Amino acid sequence: MTETLFSLHAAALNTQQLRELLQQPDCGACVTFEGWVRDHNAGRRVRRLEYEAFAALAMREGERILHEARERFGVARLRCAHRVGSLAIGELAVWVGVSATHRGECFDAARFIIDEVKHRVPIWKKEYYEDGESGWVNCEHCAVAAPSHAAHPHPHDQ
Image 1 (cartoon, rainbow, N blue to C red):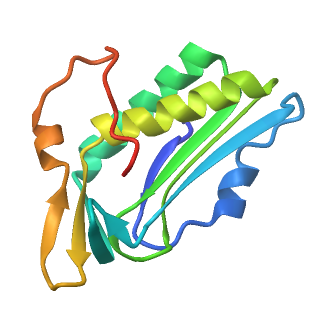
Image 2 (cartoon, helix red, strand yellow; image 1 turned 30 degrees about the vertical axis):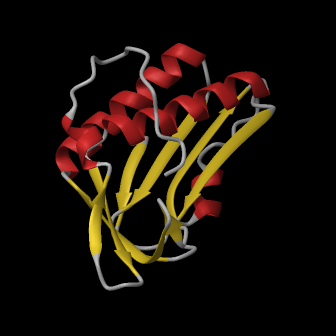
C-alpha cells in the first residue's frame, strides 16, 4: 500500500501530527508552510471563507504534485493537507511540510508544492465579506487551462 501524501480535511489540521510524519533519522532539515485565513482581500474586509473541492480529482492531482516534488527535488518526506468547508479568520487553511538531508531542497520543494496545489488542484475559495456579499476568488484563473509542468505565474497574495 502506498502512503497518502495529500489530504483534505473538514476539521482543523493537527500540525504536530503532520510534522511527525516528516521525521526521519537521515534528515537534517524540515520546512513547513502554513496558509491562514486573513481578514481582507482585494481591498475588502473578509468575515470568513469556504473551500469546496472536487475531492476525487483533488486527491489524485495533489498526490501527483507531491510525487513530482519528490522526484524533482530529491526530498525524503513530504505532505500537504488542505481544509474544506467553512473557516474563520485566523484558521489554518493549508499546510505543506518537507524534510530532506539539507535545507535547500526543502525550501524549493515546499514552494513548488504550494504553488502547484493552488494552480492545479480543484479546490475553490468563496469569501464572505463584512458588507454581506460573497464571491468566489480567482475562478477566472481556474478556467484558463495551463500546460502541465510548464512555468506559469502564481498569484502569491492569496
